[in-house]
Image (cartoon, rainbow, N blue to C red; front, side, top):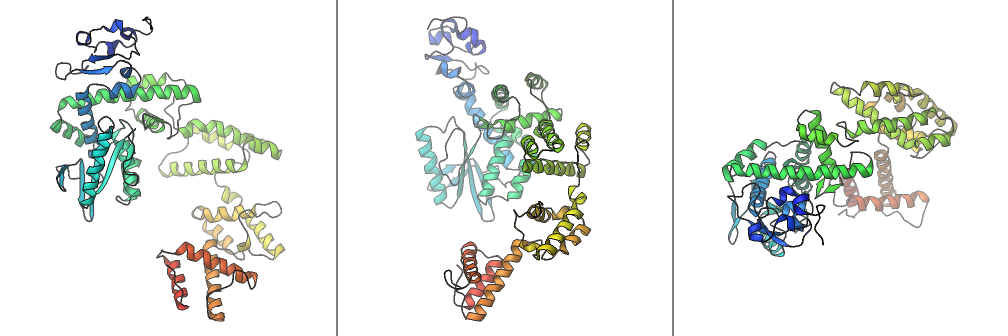
Length: 519
């Protein structure tokens, strides 16, 4: 390939070119293309006098963040991995009783381990596997054998594998993002431990909700003590590179999607672009985002420090308004489907309720716009409650049926009475006491329809046993009521087996009276 200014290493990557050891490589940066497959020698850009040089292919150092970082100075990478592990350990220590001084466990040999938790009946080892040093087949073999020895010695082992490393044990191991922020990695690990039953789920949820590092001061102290001040500079450089990589990904995403609100499943080098974007917005709103980073984000046309809710409010509002103003049913559904409109409006009401409870409110322009929607109400249950109750009373009087017989999809005289019943039960906590009294006066009303149905069927099965001397209603013979009872008994035995709640105990006791068992 002919070398031009457009592909010359010294022109395209001047900072990288300055670290080329031309004397040991036998070639200059002007003589190399940015994607050259030649292996050459490099000097550490941050500590050229302290760290040894190393060999790497030119193209591997210019092909993106992972390659640039992964084939960087080995000494810096070792320090960075150690600092990364210490930061994660400090974060997890805010939730788990990790022994900071314990770094070894004896099995058939002395095992050097990263994190040890030994409290009550819990004996847990957490191992952090960085992608740079644990990606080879030999590393996988050694890591697997070490885990086996620890487990055989009575320890629960969870390996924290950095993307793109795969799991060694699909049940116990967990993958975290590549060069993930310590609080993000810790939140993922705690969620995983909660799923395994090793950590209280509420504690894991509380940690994630904080959304910020909790052990930063401890981590810096550990890094200074165990690795040295140099590690903080190396780590700072690496995180700058990581931020640059995520920023570049957001620029590309915004150009393609037309907005800056990626979902959590959009990943860059194993890190969630959605989470990263939310964090930058949070820092910017709090005035904690570095000015140079705020300036770079502002260059993206669709960037805003507002939340995704605020950004999406006006597009959904216009659709909802168009639906409210339309008179033709087809036009209403085309503007915004009915279920979608209900969900959007109810979510908005709930959001305002939460904000007001914390002494805040929706923006004034949003409040004013919502009041202009025909028929809009912040308390739809109160406004239309009596009309709906009257329709229910008419239903009972006209049909002779109780409201207990109404199914979810039932309609009567054009009214979605099944939806109303479900909504009342679901929103019981938001109803006034007087509204609850109105509903409880309806024939057959119940707040727990499924529970009442279960009790009714259980009574039928009890009566069947008393009348027949056994609990074996036929699935094929007898009345439809007997067949229904047989199906209910079969389904309940399958559903409740192995459980020890009140219903399982009730059914188990009844079956035992007639020589049957519920496993």
